[in-house]
Length: 494
Ligand SMILES: NC(=O)c1ccc[n+]([C@@H]2O[C@H](COP(=O)([O-])OP(=O)(O)OC[C@H]3O[C@@H](n4cnc5c(N)ncnc54)[C@H](O)[C@@H]3O)[C@@H](O)[C@H]2O)c1
Image 1 (tube, rainbow, N blue to C red):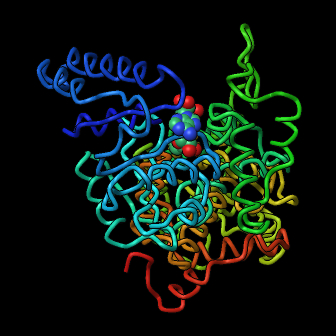
Image 2 (spheres, rainbow, N blue to C red; image 1 turned 180 degrees about the vertical axis):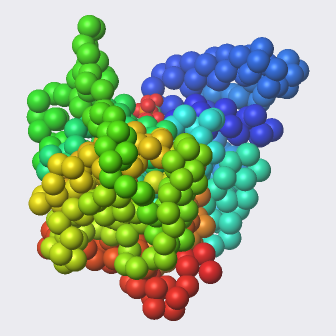
């Protein structure tokens, strides 16, 4: 990480001194960074003169004393509190009292690192994402003693380096590593409960939710040992708040040595000649619609409007009707709703309509290519085929899930938004910073809070409340900020 940060600063025009405790490491890093600059010049992203000037701005320091005239020290050493405290304490005796200190720690409290210093007010976190030269996000982390002007200067500096910084307070996981936990956790819960297999969940998240990678592919890439360690750290740091409860499934993966790509096996099999099953996709049931009578689409919700447009575009015009309850469509015996966090069976019990089906959230129902769907346990086979056929006629690949609460995308996005809302509610960051963090730090297609506004906050609140009822776990407790905004009839961005 240190080399990546040095590359960014040198490219932005700073003279950069590199120091590493390991003999020769700084010199080696400089050779590597110079090679990066040459490659950028070959690709036409820098002129040859700029590349050579940028390389010329990098120097190795022989010892810490060599950093005596630095204006900003960015620390990216081993992730250990005592080591980081020790380094900054030594630097306090070397550099000017006006020099600023930044730590690239991923998980250690910036407040705790600062506690060892005589001048803790000049230390803040500057948390880059890997690979630092490519990832736009930088979390600027204020510890309890950090002076606001220091955080502002670091923010402006990151911006001048071409990054998109966000302010956050020194709380476990900062923004990204905290808010991202449900992306992995909800998927693992749905898998553990037999809602669907890993490939099907991943396909729904990508083709319905617009995520670049599904949660299982991503965990396999990160490594289950690393992903579990981050979850455990955040969980412990929040005094074992059930919001962050790690997954037994992932613990078993680590125990088995199935660490993901790096070990050849994770949720997927990466060994030579291995084949992985495709996502579960319902076979074509559109023919059942012919005998089922007309399709009726209800109301003006985003999902209903998209369904109408898609059916019409596919040459299957439908009837339109005013919304009576929350249903979006009906064909033959099947009645279809967008999930509100209840299972289809729960809804069927409440409404007396045995042939109840629920579909998942989509990032954009007009363009999504796959949807998860589940039917009530008492639904008959004809109605099942009609519900599947209806969605297929509108051009969706359909993945039929076991009837789990909130399917996959709806519960995941509701929980991501809940965590982001709680971070905002606790003064960790602003609404915009939470969304920027998740879009740029982990490439989400939309910030979770903007997404919650698009879904409608009352629906998000209902989903969380129903998940809470279904599981009886404090994990799903609703952020006070969501309640407040719903009561005020306002969106998070209002
Ligand atoms: N790897 C990531 O994806 C990532 C992302 C964001 C933040 N971080 C954080 O960045 C920091 C570095 O992570 P990394 O993955 O680059 O680690 P790394 O082990 O690859 O590099 C750490 C370097 O620090 C040197 N070092 C160790 N102790 C030192 C000391 N006392 N003085 C000077 N040099 C010392 C080591 O020789 C090594 O070259 C950690 O705090 C980590 O949490 C890592």
